[in-house]
Length: 271
Length: 356
Image (cartoon, rainbow over the protein chains, first blue to last red):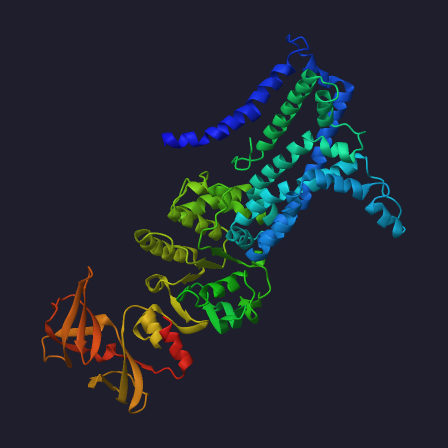
């Protein structure tokens, strides 16, 4: 046993350099000013109108994206549960296929599709329906988020769904439950771990994204991720960037804590 | 007693596999009926058709005279105890039992009383708030039964409910089930491949094979008067051999004439003969109808099991008295204990026997 412990050494070194040290750096910068003395200004900066709006919009869009993903993914999970095992693998393969392509590419593809004279609008125009101006709006950002993160909702839900013993469903019917009751009393509670981890895996990257909002928002819509990115790169203010990152982290931790309350057994929780 | 349940000409195919072929079955009110057969004989499919989980391709299911063939399981007045218990893992013992009652909108007080009553009935008082995942297999089985019976079904379906338990527990549960059935006064339809279970608990045993009912009757008649070689070999141990019915009440087995009690087979008719091992009487050489030599001896607890070579046949014999290997003995059989059966008429029927 003692020797086996050393097998984790490369991973521990990686975590140390890739997560722990940067986190400590962010903590340090977040609570210091340019001269290196302690300050809370970087944290309280979240109250600035621009920052608060960006955080609020990020939370709102991530929430919408998560809800849409859940609405799209859950019925898929329900249907896949019933299917013969051979077909099931193929359907899941198709659903997660987009995941295998770089997500920047996929996002740029949406930009091309949604552009003012892009594929979508040309088609709509050709059909005489008129243009759909959603590029550079929050709607386009949500669309991009949903497209990018949907597989992360489908996979955990699917994984939990296929493991639900069919006998339990039959037992519920046998005891008089209607289809609706089977869903709410048996399937939903039993698939909760999958739902929770799906929500986590979609909400967290969605709330922190800055690439999708940059590409599909036309550089005019700022999410908290964009603000932080700009502080680090454009403005070279890593203190403010770190401070806002810490605030965002706190918001994510709070949402996860709330989420975990729904998951009694803790099977689906990631943190 | 009237029929609570009738299956009329039920056929069911899975892909191209004919699982049930023109099956007819009548279940009387307040009986303990067992569907007995090897795996793949169609017994579980029959139960699932009664429960509403499988729709037959042809035929009708009547419940108290009403056609319920296309009624979904949640609309049927019967409940099932599943083979793997199928307790809801996200609910406590009490919540599991209350599941059906809550759905039918019973009052909290009624549900509380029912849970207590049901737990008492299955000898698990005070377990309401336990986590079902922490219960042993036997306890889970009891809760599954409690969960089914609180809904006061007129028919309780049980799909090999005690197959996964260990031997001692299985025997205890057999007595429990008989007691439960008598206390509840409802019909039990029980599926098993275990012939001992079937004989112990049932009022009526239905022996099935390859989608057909082979024989139906009381445990005694199934055991003592098997109608064909399949039933004879499946239920208990037996010596099955070819014979010739010389005339009424006289059969020639292995070249020796044995008096029997069967009539109506005609004269010089080839038949199959079944003799149960406990019905073979061993004595000193010359005192019986045939002489032979003991070739194997095993002690089985209650009795000895011996193999005796006689007339070119290896007789299986069970007796409380012991004859050592190599001992010369004589064999005799009481006429009443010789069971004569018609030979299978087609190769199809023969296949039924070979498949055992």
